Amino acid sequence: MNTYMARGAAGLLLLAAVAACGGGQDGTSGGKTEITVSGMPPSTQPESQKNFLAQVAEFEKANPTIKVKPTETQYDVKTFAARLAAGQLETVFRVPLTDPQAMIKRGQVADLTADMKLLAKSDFDKRILAPSSTPDGKIYGLPTEAYAAGLVYNRELFTKAGLDPDKPPATWDEVRAAAKTISDKTGVPGFGMHATANTGGWMLTTMTYSYGGRMEKEEGGKVVPAFDDVPTRQALDLLKAMRWDDRSMGTQHLRNQDDLLRDFAAGKVAMMMGAPNLYGSYIAKFNGKPEVYGQTTLPSGSGKGTLLGGTVAVVSPKATPEQRQAAVKWIDAVYLRPKYDAALATERAEKKKADGLVAAVPQLPFFAPAVSDPVMAAEKAASNVDWEHFATYNEGVKAQEFISEPPLAGQELYAALDTVVQAVLTRQDADPAAEITKAVEKVKPILDRSQQ
Image (cartoon, rainbow, N blue to C red; front, side, top):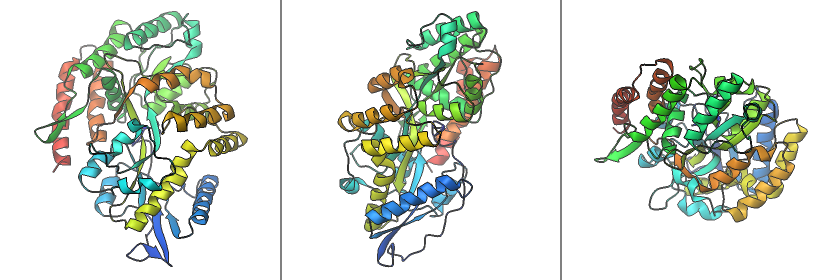
């Protein structure tokens, strides 16, 4: 779920109502194929909106038979379902990775498999396409952003505690040991855990994946909770041990992602879960020191999984074949090209640097190494970020299993699990197993309603 978008679903706000689609019923206007596309920055961000409209103009020039009508609409978890049911969505719209599987089952997005031939590059990393694909190989969406959850750590505090900042923890046992060492030697809480605004459930899900577990499963033809199992209990037992036995997590425990990142940037917590795309907010929003930021992969428990988050562009099932093809061309030009065109990646990084912005933070490659490696090399060369501080992340994600966020009612599941995390962190007598059982009873009817 994402800032990592920043937090997949919850990090985006609805910026404006959907514009009227216009055009003929066959998706044409003035002899051109017309598509509507979401995601244009609002007028309150004039420079960003100007850049977006420039992309529209460039695309229309390269594709003279296509007319693009942008809207300022962004994904909003509170209104999306109603807009979807009312048929108010654009031809192309973006959703978090929690959504595509349920939408596919309901016939709410178009099958793009036959249109993949229109892409300039199609040798994707299969892990990236999985959230919007079906077991029979059909593809219903294309990635626009992707992150794999990891561990963010304070290199300066590691050094002060006598730990090697170039060798961050690789397992949860090592995280626990490092957190206690840092807390004992510096007085700074060694680890901080998300707990509010759905982030507690989100990060508990991430930890569960690292222990080999899942949050949902199919049983008797229905999706049911799967977190009443050993992996989730292992994650909670670890948190309880660090909080109450080691006393290495401090006393502030009702924080969301921004709260934690603020404290991390201020040197008030040494480690937290997070992906590389937190770095931009760490610098620009919270005035963090570049030399202090360290990023590694998610520590392993009894498994090597981590949460895959981000956004995917999907196409309305009402789109005509011509609109669908135009939509795929738009997605390719705007979202995919920077991932396979090294020259464009360099150009965008240089522009960001010229504007005084963070440029080319390491991200997950969308494509196979032959395509992605030259782009990453170009980004590294043009970046104003120290990629060495992301070295263990960049190397470690190559071997990780990427697991999508819970595909059904993910946000509601996270909300139910927030209370579990809060109980374990704020009440010494809280029983993780009992708290999980309570959450299962909350989630069952939510999943049932989502499948009616």
